Picture 1 (spheres, helix red, strand yellow):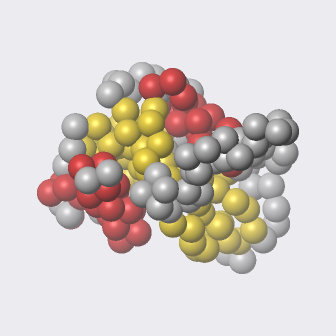
Picture 2 (cartoon, helix red, strand yellow):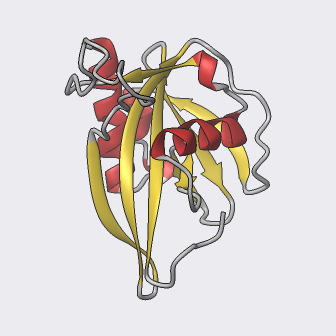
Picture 3 (cartoon, helix red, strand yellow):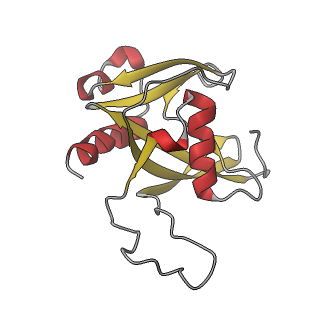
Amino acid sequence: MAHTSKYLDYTVSCFIVKKNKVLLIYNDRYYLWLPPGGHIDPDENIEGSIFREIEEETGITKNEIGLIDPRKSIPEENIFSDLKGHNIVTPTFSDIHEAGKNHFHIGFRYFLTTASTVKKSRDKHVVRHKWFTKEELDDPRYNLKKHVKFYAKYALKIASHP
C-alpha cells in the first residue's frame, strides 16, 4: 500500500524462521532484501496487517505461521472472557526510521516460525525469496541493511531458544 500520511506511517516487519534460516524478500522497488511486511492500512489492526502482508508477499497463510512471543506478552488466562476481544502479541522491537525525504515509518518488528514453503507473491515488487543462514546474513553480496541483519539474527536466536 502507498503512504497513508504525508509525514508518518506505521509498518510491520515479519522475520520468519524455518529450520535455522530466516526468510527475506528482494523488493525491486527499493533494490533491497527486506523481511516480509509493509504499511498498516487505515482501519486495520496490527495483527491483521502482519498476516495480510505475509500472505501477500510469500503466500504463507495465517494458519501456517506461529508467533514467537519472547516477552510473554499474552496472559495465560483469557482476560477478555467477559467481553469481545483478545490479546495480541506486542512487537518485540519498534523503531522510527526515515523512509523518504521528510517521511518516516514507525516500524513494529515481529518474529515468527513456519514449517511451510514460500508460494508465489502477489506483490509485483517482490521478485525473489531467500531463506538466509546466519552466515549468509553477513555476506557482502547481499548488501543487507544493518537493522535487517540485526533483527534477522535475533529471529534465529529466539527461534532456537524460545
